[in-house]
Image 1 (cartoon, rainbow, N blue to C red):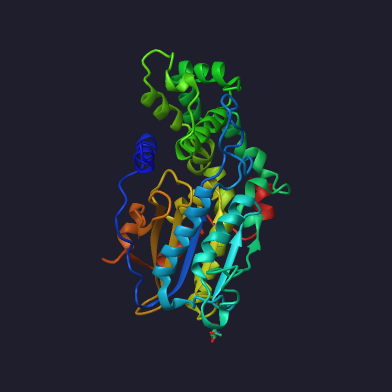
Image 2 (image 1 turned 90 degrees about the vertical axis):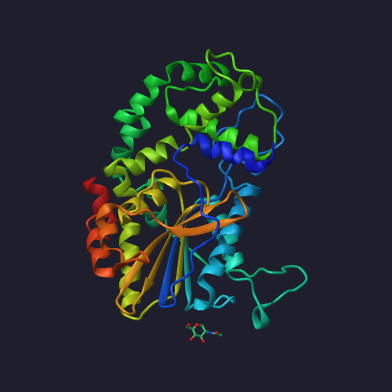
Length: 382
Ligand SMILES: *[C@@H]1O[C@H](CO)[C@@H](O)[C@H](O)[C@H]1NC(C)=O
């Protein structure tokens, strides 16, 4: 089976994934700012299945894989062609600003994205022999912005994550009871404690890598001894658990809002700056599923999952009237990326013109109800 077929199966298994458009939309000629946020690229699982001698995973658990690096580079190339003349190829500190979560996988993803955004030329081409097509590009690490779940001072984390970590949210509870035979089968064969759905998600992450690296499946997956299951069916079942807790957080108001409300405020601030004629032309952020998906939902995207290296673009133009357009970006599936209009929540859809632009004041009024700038007090309140 080739990679595309395998990934099509992975996508089909995750069910909400739809067919991606072939071509990216073009930037509006009046756009003066592009904000983009991305989930990190493909990464290794948190725990490895140790059954067969492993031919992959040398980067270490949760680290970015070669596929993840290629996804980042592919995203950077697509962004480069989208932004066009808005920013120069050479890094210019007054035109761009980049932010990352402290996680290695996010920083490394951002580095591959900016490598493609800033392929140096002329005076910027500093070493043709060793670093062909690459220039260092600085970024800031900001965890309250892009990795709130890991911010120790944020006491609210325990509270909003509690019902997710304990699988006591109704949707998670139901997932457990309706898959009890399957979860027992996973537990018996992995020796992992499937009382927690997070472990089923780890199993899914292993399958994604086994597919990508064309590695050997454990025999209990290849030839299932579970009633009613073929190999393909079992694989699809396991993949349903990918990112189950992260997606549940984005779905669950208190969690999604605490994870992403501060980032949302930051995005609104950047838009207000651009509207006042201040600030850079491109601002990029690298983060995680539960943060990126949450901020997208808070902005009015209709979306319930986010694959590795997928995320959003917000395009802003001042003329003829200040307006924003919300776009998705997705890998298809590794090196190719596509930028396309988002599905909007009905309230925003009503405000959008035929090109998808929403008046800035309408968008701000919608999004600001979820935004906060004082994250510490928000964490105490949660
Ligand atoms: C850097 O960007 C600023 C703002 O766009 C511009 O004025 C300046 O000329 C650029 N520098 C170079 C060397 O292109």
